[in-house]
Length: 132
Image (cartoon, rainbow, N blue to C red; front, side, top):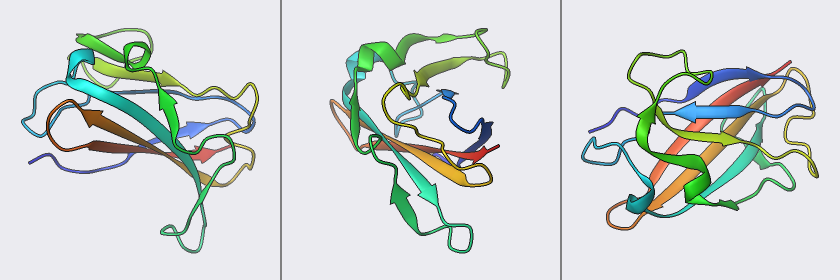
């Protein structure tokens, strides 16, 4: 069983974020494009006094993503990946050209991804980003 934990980072106010991860399925196998039916994300603003309180950010609610644009069929290294030598298979840059995602400095935002595999249970992973 995979251990669920948030990926922590920092983002600039009024900026974008390039989010990268190594994502595996329920059998600990790295996901690939053919293994996924769909992908989406939502950005939530967290309340400082109540981190369980989530407010979806307008324009970043259940946004469908093109799997071929965010998932690699082989693990990648370089390109900003500094976690380890193994690499990543997921990379997404949030589009903030029309709707701001991170508008309040000092706030923590959660970017929640939901991947629906062709077979098996959905995969959920999250980034917790402190806005500066």
